[in-house]
Image (cartoon, rainbow over all chains, first blue to last red; front, side):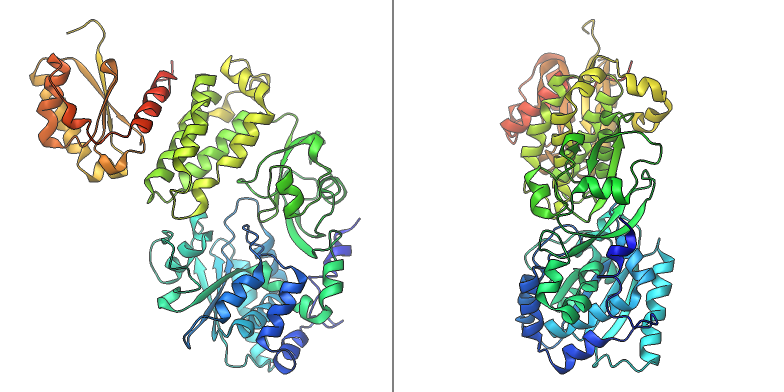
Length: 421
Length: 114
């Protein structure tokens, strides 16, 4: 099974055989499809946002379309701060015309006269390629229909990926999530209705417009189209792949990823970034789509797939994830600061041999106290990996509590140094 | 002074600090010293009682005191020394949070590594 088999579907949409962009979908939208028809098409296809939350795209589009006011803004979120995810910068760098064409179609659908494409400053190649694509499209005479397209370079901090923090950064302020309501769709940049969509979500539009509902749905085995995913560095064939939704996860890990680089067997997988629940090796035949993964207690998220080998100490890995969320919490919500900080402290205690089940029993109480108390969803992010990890790797936690983790002993203490600080 | 050295935890995280916990901690340290009490004052991470900070936990008495501003330092010292009434400094305590704070401490979260 080759990467190319999937590449030719979504990622080649909108290109001539020569590889040059043609903007045929954009032209067809302008000439034939009205905004409402585009939104109906998106609804019929069942496109869900590709940034992580998986919200039905048509609902956001429709809400945005009905907002009052003459100034409306579309922001494409290419900040991509989810560790392990490379798909958005891959799209911007290698398929910038696809992103631009999708952005124009989305802007047309919601009546936005401005498009701002936010790109992580750690991805300069993505910025260069997208800026060049805009220039070359203008030079080639592509009519933007008055839609102004510009880029915004954003800092490489996790919280910037959160949509309201992103808007703050675009407006020149610190990356602190806003309280909602009002939602960005009601009052976003400079008070104007602002729709935030992930870069990949926009990149699906040219294919949807050019192929229609049935071929798009059938391009995915589960009837939901395709999605991009990123296989982490630990895989023999790491990188970004286009896969049909519903494809068995094991087929992605082994068929596309070629298994782990070091040849070790896989003990567990997080299919949707660090905030997704762990799947045990026995659960890897699950379909790679939001509904199937949710049934298994995990999530599709932004489809950044991380696999852990049988040689990994999962207590140490979970402690690293807890440390990550504690460090990345912006600190403005007390309960988030408390929850992420305490979970980090508890896991640090356990991983270094000073923990107990009594201490781990506090995890549920901390999580309950924090529930619904944050301005953004970072407060919920440690929950799934920690709870699923405690359920799946109880023996490893027990070994740490007894100070007898054979996996850590095999690695040596060097790995734990950073966690002890 | 008892055989075991008294330990007092003072939250110096963002909110408590913004409410003056660092200045209170310094004053508390001086006041214990002046009262000839051997007390170890440990800065701690947040216990999520930010809205009623600065927060202080007196370990041997299983006592959480909230709203401990600089002007309350003498009351804390009297409490540690002779058990003087500090109910006013407990008035804002959330019982659920209080239970969790001591469960965390009992579970050894604040014990230093050997």
